[in-house]
Image (cartoon, rainbow, N blue to C red; front, side, top):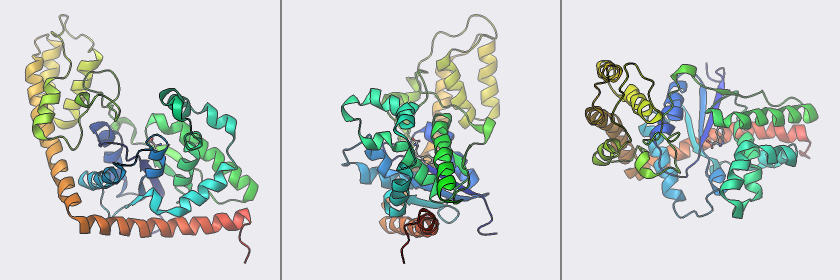
Length: 334
Ligand code: TRP
């Protein structure tokens, strides 16, 4: 059935350590999709330059990320894992698309406005055209499904706009891509102080990383914010408590979850016990991923082979699209 399956693309920025939010929000879904679709997963190093111009840690971040993607269940024989900067075709497509993107709409993009607020001293054109580069990532494989979180939906909508304008002006090349997720399966992973989503820029003690060692995992969870417990039966859970229960739901056994739910509802929950249990279950969950990833990235030959294999598959697909694009645009002279 090769070539008949729908094409999926997603990207992840190599800007820091992979955390539990990345795992449950993205990577686990990717691992499910690789069995069903024609999947491309891209480490978007060019995108990271828009916010992280210092590249001292870029290489180790990229390699660690790829090892963690595979350690988390992506299979390089089932999906295409590659690095954005290895595919120059993306940059060329980006160039054509910039002429179809308007300054006004780029300035209105929510993520752009956020980043202007965060780094007012570096409002570079790459930041402004970030969604155009993302569109090139997607359209270069003529992908139709893009597994991303809510915060990325505006970028996917912009991608459709650019693709539509291209098709209208130059002829039909691109199918329309849509954001995709497995709906209810998406569990929100909150930071350990309940202040928001677990994120890369967050205080490291409030974030669980796939690279954390066992003691650090236990320590972070024991320090997670709790209180003296509910005093009224069947109360609503405060954010930070709800966040801990969500973690329990993703790593602990059914009877454990039920026990603490019941204790909470009966106002006799002991958060110390709950965190201890959660710590142990989290260690059981993270440590095999950490060990697998570590072993992979220590095997330089393997990593090189995986990256070369991914690059050659991604480039073949990218070249085929770019050929159609060049013909359509009319920059094919001989
Ligand atoms: N902008 C995405 C993020 O911040 C990363 C990304 C880059 C991406 N290119 C992509 C996601 C293409 C999906 C498809 O998470």
